Length: 316
Image 1 (cartoon, rainbow, N blue to C red):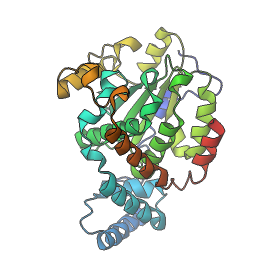
Image 2: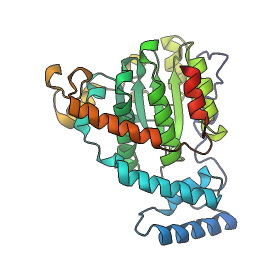
Image 3: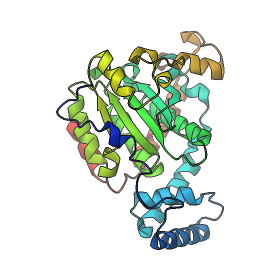
């Protein structure tokens, strides 16, 4: 079995079943009190935001995220509706984030043993100068995978492979903004987080991440560390072999480069890739700067209010 650092707790069997394991709070498993709260939630949202397009399953995610407290769930979903109207995360042109696939940073492919879609991120390829666009890339993937989910499934699995990760890849801005986005606007969407081969520095980063997240979320994390054989053995407890990338010991045929070629065709020469960092003109940099300013004024999740800035200060 894979070894785990003393800072982390291995919980493979439990982490696979955290999401959806609660006895109540889901469609078909509501107590009379929960059903009454859901009905009132829909009534108030329909009145305040007609045409919002949210299903009962959507509303229940916000209710579970706020322990069925309507006075907290309603403002939360209204802020998300405003955020979606302004940010339009589902409308990101794939061409603008192609760079993350050409460089091998992100791969949306495969499923875990529960059948949930998986996003693999290979952090050694991350460039902190592209932090804002990296957030947009992950939101694009979330939106896409949510649309492609089978009926009845609500959650996504994220795997972060930190093999080869160095301080040159460390990106506090990306980390803070992606956590804010997931916590505030995609509640109850994360089924499992897998961190592979975290370096020693990640112990500090994990301490900060835990400070920003409720216990319900941190219970969905699994850390895998060891030799290639040990990592493969542990991954096979969570994923079918054909979902695991080949460099991690699996038989997954897809790579980031193959995936993006299927979507957009062969990669253009570097000189013709306008979103590559070295080629971004003033207009594109200005657009990204404006997008970043939006994040700077996005309110933190109530569980994280104030803590995100503290964590950022600690990490600098």
